[in-house]
Image 1 (cartoon, rainbow, N blue to C red):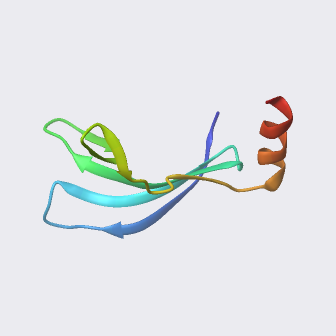
Image 2: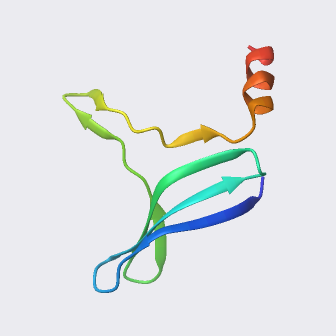
Length: 78
């Protein structure tokens, strides 16, 4: 798998949070709301799903299809 596109949605100058980005993998799968964070030695990425009382209460669609063929292929495999 290769990252084929990176979109910088927002940048921050004076915080540990440096940017919020979206990436596309193999021109087929988009992952949104990835946070780029300044660690002590390097940058790292993370994303968050809010969890309350061991249940997912607020689900944000982090991954979406880019081409309908991807969904059709997955449906056919199942």
